Amino acid sequence: MILYRSPTLKTKQAISPVATMAEQDWFVTNEGQCREAEVMPQDEDLLRPYRLYRFLTDLEDILERVQDDQVRLTLIRPLVRRLLNSSEWLQLNFLPPDPTTGWSILMLYNEPDFPITIQNVVWSPGSVSPIHNHATWGIVALLSGQEKNTFWQRSHTPDHPDRIQPVGECLLNPGDILCLMPEAIHQVEAMGDEPTISFNLYGETNFNQRFEFDLEHRTAQVF
Ligand SMILES: [Fe+2]
Picture 1 (cartoon, rainbow, N blue to C red):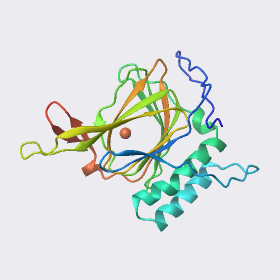
Picture 2: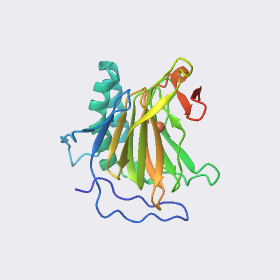
Picture 3: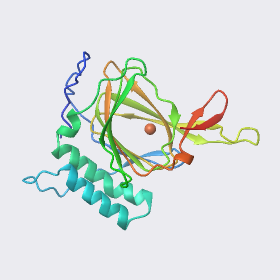
């Protein structure tokens, strides 16, 4: 089954259609352990589009009802898959990557007083992100391209309280969904010759606990 259709990139760099698409869900613990998660069957009403406002309503209900982030991710993940399958426009709206930074963010939803952020992120081929956590739960659905995620774990010493060490990798293909716990530390790299495009959903960020990590100096900076 093809999950996502390949979007049409609005830049000079065309994206080749993806012939076969994986469909795998991944869950990353606070310690950076990445494990396969079951792709849950969906009880979809195929005659009724699952629109963004319905998704947001369902999301708000879950967040009010459930406090545990792992359970939240388990409940929200299939809704993201359903949303992307039903509302194609969400896959088709993104910005070309900034030639200086190699990435772009298009905010799709960010309402004051409702702690949810939805954005489409593009990385140009070969771009590598800083090593970071998000200090909130997060869901990343890859729409196009291939994205390598490297996961890290805190490994402090008395002299270096922010020392980290790598603990694993995961290669995301279009159709894959990655769930991140708030303290999960990762780094993404756009693999291959095509930009990566991903749909990203985040909860309420605790900005005091969101860090970028410097491997060389074994430090962490709030960003
Ligand atoms: Fe991230």
